[in-house]
Image (cartoon, rainbow, N blue to C red; front, side, top):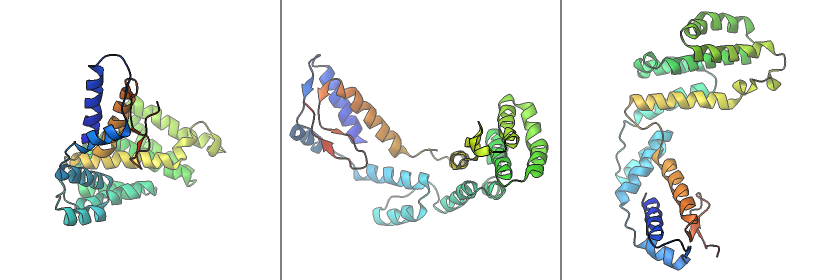
Length: 242
């Protein structure tokens, strides 16, 4: 991301000039930005990386046709990956496990932590649906043996089973396990594992680059007053406060 390197370059330049805080006008800043050359191919790859990683298959296909940018994985696999993710988000964990195994059986075979978390999510869904007897049986048969082999798994299992001890689970100490965010967390973990199995980055590059931009702006704030980007979504330069 050229803007990041531009700001970083300005930071290095200002640091070499001494301790006095430099004031840079919006006109000066925009002139420097206009001198930065950005390859369209690089920007297109960044966009495609985001669309593929986040699972926007239709948008990725349209962008491929319009820009000529080829994705680094088969777009058909995105649909399968999103089906797994959606199944977990909807609480259909058993269906999600079947879909993962259809995609690549080695994903769960080589990732015991992911498999445990999926089974843990199945247990949570049973408890959510009031199937107490089935939940206890599932915990004893499927999760307890794994807990005996792994202390962390055991602690997570005990935490999950403790939901059964409370009549008002919405206000119990582990109520967050029943929150939608727990499903999203598990779905994200599965999504990352599938991407890794396809030799693709687990996270899109764009958010990381934006975080780096905000970090380097914070560093530059100590050295200069300059037009900074405060609202990433708008990406507008705001006049420096002098």
